[in-house]
Amino acid sequence: MGAGGRRATALAIGALYPSVALLPRAYKAPVFTSAIRFYSTDNLPPTPSSASTKSVVAKLRELLVRDTRKVSTGETISAVLSGLVMGNLLWIILGTTTFGLALMSGLYYFDGLISDEDDPKPSMLRQMASQVMSVGLGVNVQLGKSLPSYKDGKLRLSDFKLVSDATVDGQPALSGRVEHMDITLSFGKWSEGRGLIQAMEIFGLNGKLYRNYDQSLVDASYVFDSVKVHDSVCRVYSSIDDPTPLKISVFSADMVNVHGDRLLMDFFGANNVSGAINNSMFTIHKRQTPDGAADSKLIRFKLDGINLGSLARADPQSKFNWMVNGRAEISADITFPPLDDAATASLPSVFDSMINHIGGHTSDDDTTTTTDTQHPSTLLKGALTALYHTFSKPVPETSAMVPYVVVNVTVKFHDIKASVPKYLPSAASGAPFVSLQNLRALISCVNGEGGTPPNPIVVKTTAISKVDDLYNVSDLTHTPMWDAIVGDVYDELLKLVKVKEQRILSQRSSMWSHSLASQLVLLGLGVMV
Image (cartoon, rainbow, N blue to C red; front, side):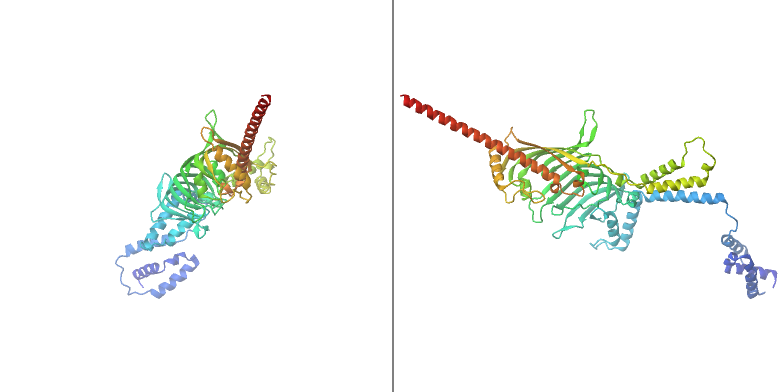
């Protein structure tokens, strides 16, 4: 075979067997030799574009030839640092709300490709997005067909429904529609088991709630950094057949550090809340000190002129169901204790504590440090000792003092009219606040007095409750603190009844003594005559 034939054969073999270059050098020669012997022929036609073929084969060989040179230490360190930087950068990207928007936009895009627009049932992809959003909230976020948008660094969901998993007589315990909601996501908080949503701002909620379900819907471990509500309304029904629900409107609410196990306390501890209960204005705000600063421990709640008749009609078994007409002004000063958030400490704070322990155990303040103490094995031993003490540190003993909530309440009754109710007003335990005989006397006294302006019936009381009694509570009227306040109000009203009875008795005894004295005078004058 001539030189030209051998060259063409070698090129053909190189194109047909590019992986031969990957074999060890000891095996290349036999493979090439056998291939050349098998394909060698002197009658091979000349290649028309041997130059271009040679360049392509050369490039393929350069790509496929294994690099057998040793990797230097600098290159290894550079690769590790690059991996760390890119890994942290990827985590930062995945931990933002932008990633959530991109993911939901992708789900909506693929949903439009595979789903039928005329099908009223939600598709599988939207159900997946709804389930991820609903974990821990106690309600199913049924997203509509509108695409989520990105506004001011937040993910905006528009025109969707909220339906709770819990039911009351076959109806959802909570249902409603939201005009739009802005949320921020935190995968770091989610990894700590404190929920996916970091901050939430709700606009235009129109909901319906049944009072029969008195358990908290939100998971106890869920924590919101911030919750804001604007222009929302919720109607509270005592039963399915209730014709007159309790209407609660929230004009504006700003709450921080909202925990799933203490929603009631966090609501009353909000920065500010304004709204209406049955068209009666209420406000919640922190007390302002003379220097203009807000006292974070003292909260002022004020309710202006609520219609007691509407409350009695909305709930025939309410605490004041015997008041069929009139208004009540309620003012309460709530003092919260400093709450310990050690149980909800974030993971970074734990790592900071570990680092501080390591630094404390490995540092040496003595100036006469020897060379042996600076050995890497000594530092590693100190670090391991610090980790051991960190995780084996005994739990500190809690103090004997139990945190309490103190509430000072002032109630003013105006134009009260009362009648004997169908049910005696009772506490959450079922025990009545007052007997039927005392209630009749109270009704007679109230109808006589009435609290007509400018002399309303004023009742003041103070209630103290443990903080633990307000955890996992969704209805204030089912708490021991509420029963204590209502019981004190009845005691004060019964004192007014006794005062009125004593006044009537003194007036009658005075009239009887005056009439008796006048009769004796007339009798004496008659005898003298």
